[in-house]
Length: 294
Image: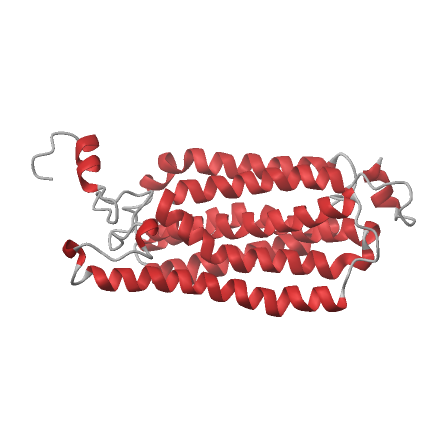
């Protein structure tokens, strides 16, 4: 490593089949993590004995957390839905699109939340600040967005199509402009950095909070009998992706996690559009849902 003459050469020398000794960056700031995910189930080389064994234990614990999440989601959400809330024989394209929509916003929200949590940790300077400020404010802003969604005409055209597009554009702008904005606040006083974090979480949390109640309000008219499935799919996706978001950030970087979240919301927009195209044989819809179905 000492003989490397460029960053590219240093990265090539430092990346081993089982271990990753490349210097950390803001996109992958996990300087304690040197275990590659592909090596979790393989014996470590002799060079990894000692303190790296603790790193291996921590990373395998993350894998166990994912396994536990899958198991508990299957038992706590999947099994009750299969036994007590089966769709009433109407598994049409509109229902599948609605299920895809709620799964996509569940995955997208967790990916965006974890990415913001990790990025703002670098700005705030300590994980405890990030947990207290970012997590609380983001959930609070999303709750406020859910509250005001009742007063917005989001289930009627053209607003029902404008808000998902605006949400995707906002997340994309935040992803593209982060490296230009964040460094300006990293050396600021603590109060200023906290204010910056609150502004970012409010800007993203409010529109993120619109997605779930708006979709639920629309689907209440189209698929009232299947609402438990929509809730359950969203909850299962959120629980599983709370761990998967960390795995993606560890392996591909925080930016990748955020961009996958953007793709999920883009897919949710397509599913939202398809879900509004209810077939003619559906039960009578409310006036707002009928205007969306066009």
